Length: 90
Image (tube, rainbow, N blue to C red; front, side):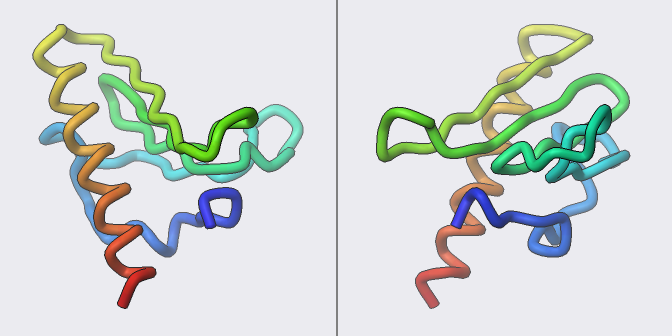
């Protein structure tokens, strides 16, 4: 499921209180699939994708502002994943 995620599945407009600028499922350089999603805001980003070696997903996060902002990005990314998994279970 994670490998086939696309922007249409994301119904939020804000991440860590900031407007979402882009939602990517392909690399910007060569348009290759990233096997998940990357959500970008002005001051940070999150990427969610399956692990290549374990039966788990991973969330990668970067904040350009602060540790508090980073923690909010992590929480919001987990909320997105919870929403995606709950929609599938229905």
